[in-house]
Image 1 (tube, rainbow, N blue to C red):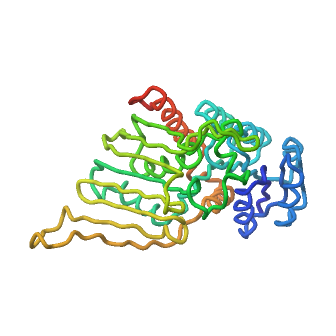
Image 2 (image 1 turned 90 degrees about the vertical axis):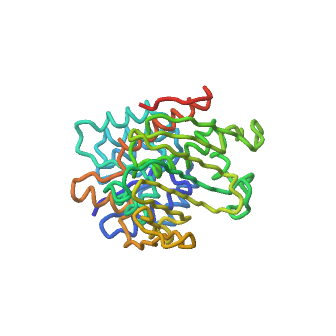
Amino acid sequence: MIKIAIVGTGGIAEWHASAFKNNKDSDVIAACDVNNERLNVFCDKFDIKKRYNNVDELLENEDIDAVTNTTPDAFHKEISIKAIKKNKHIFCEKPLAENYNDTKLMCEALEGKNLINMVNFSYRNSSGYQELCEMVRSGKIGNVFHMDANYYQSWLTSNYWGNWKEEDKWLWRLSSKHGSKGTLGDIGVHIFDFASFPIGKIKKLNAHLKTFKSKGDKIKDYVLDANDTVVSMVEFENGAIGTVNATRFATGFKNRLELRIFGDKGAVKIAFDDAITEGNKFMFTNDTQREFSSKEDKLQWEEIKCQPTLTNFEKFIESIKNNNNQEPDFRRGAEIQKVLDKCYESSKLGGWIEVN
């Protein structure tokens, strides 16, 4: 039984606790949070006995095999490195850190240590996406020329999510003072991983970040200064080009990811809100290989249904059991963080910028 400790008991931690509690090979035995009331509510809900307000004290517990880091972005580096130094396997929420230099330090801390490390790019949990990636990488759609990827959220316009103006779980994501890197850091990190994993590394980009809400307004202790919309053009190392965008003003959408990739022998596309229940299929066409009998002959897309894949939580436990680090690992997290840093830089400079 792999014994897990959760550091940070906010909303996202409940997902982690449920996943590890429901895995027959793992259990959550400890949790830590500076907010004692929040910690106790969380631990009572998930029947966690060992409770800490200090992460250093938690890490002295030799019964703990692994740590899952669900703290705000600003604390990912410090807490993850502390866990690594205490020889704990580490599972970190995205983004891996606030900037690329911090992610490099996290990767360097792992050198010479036989520790499993993963970052929670949760849309890798889509079995349709995994098979789409395999199809693209195997060359079935030929040379990739063009792609577009979009992440649509609506919680700044829709009541579906609740009232963001009143709830701390939303407000901190709008305030750089509270560790937020805005839409780019929160959901842009997902869509850049989503866009590039099947195609390859991004060579250069041109990004524009915008804050549409009343920038500088303040609610309670939260100054609303973080970006809420990102648009970008990208060029990959293989020469393919495309667009990668993310926004929280997508009225009419819940939490939707879309990806289309076009090659000289075919194309693939996928779209879903939930990676597990809706992300179990994708679309494929090889109309470039088909003879058309007339202009009325319709273009054809084939729906490909896929068997479930392991979630990142399951991959983490399996990796520890087999001593074989699966993706997405810290190095992948660092690679994506470098792209995000370049987006901030590009937006500030107002033009194209090299990534590597």
